[in-house]
Image 1 (tube, each protein chain N blue to C red):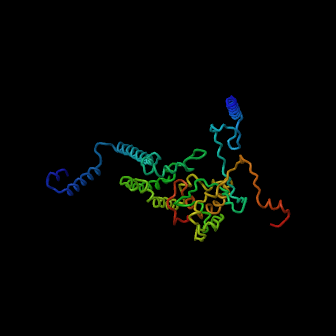
Image 2: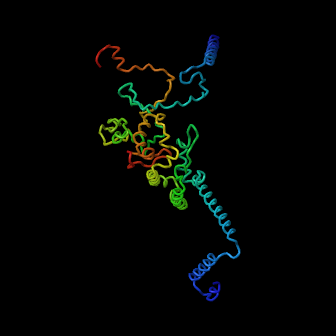
Image 3: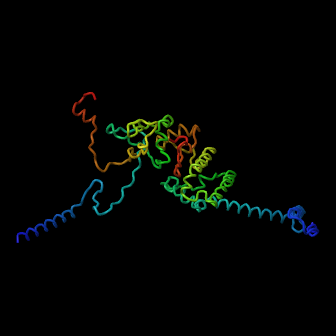
Length: 156
Length: 212
């Protein structure tokens, strides 16, 4: 008898729980309030930030972001459009920043004469930026801010 | 003249051709005894109009994208690649078709290019690039022909639409404005020097100036 009551209670609890879940509109910053089993309307594609001005890195190891549009740039076995400006020999003409010397290094730490094959595909790390308001907020604080908070006015 | 043929029926082929030519020349040079001068002139004029109109219509027919993509070499390779680029699909829907870039618009240059292109008909008939691998093997050579042509005519086919005078560099991205100001306007470089591979995929670019 007790077991039966317990089962009934459990069933009632599950029913109430699922009912509450179904009623409660699920909200996510990325999905909005579209139910999980529905596909919402796609957000419009935003234009690429195309200022050609360098952006500060958030931490020293961050791969710099690409401050310009790279639509249609071919990077494959046949060629690399990025290197048309960013290769060492091209920077005088293009006035673009040279590919970092770390990219000449193979995985054994040996410096090669030019870009190491493992660093050939630029967009694996470097990405262009869109002009958007981020749907998810971010409270990242960079190291300089943290240090000056701990020791205001100290030299870094 | 007709009697000469009958005189010697065992005459060789060449003498008979020679005799026929002389006879034809005689007919062509003798003044007409039936048609008036005015009728001849008008008939000649009408025939000229029909010939010229027909010639140019046929020429323009070979100057359409439909004609270019009627062979699989173009349709499956270069045309397929064009479709994703800005010269095929863009915000305003203005687009370039094959002859806009690959055939000079000026008549004499067009005829010269069309005569060169007869070699492409040969290539199609004998299947010099009739599959993807053959095309990829020949791709650099084909591209180099076009680059050389653009370089030689100062990227004329680009400039048919993209005029340097009408280019408002304040509307361009800072990077594009700087490059155009520095290299295009002084005439130091021409469009194709920097804008290779904007309408089709690139071949193996090793050894091409400006590429790594």
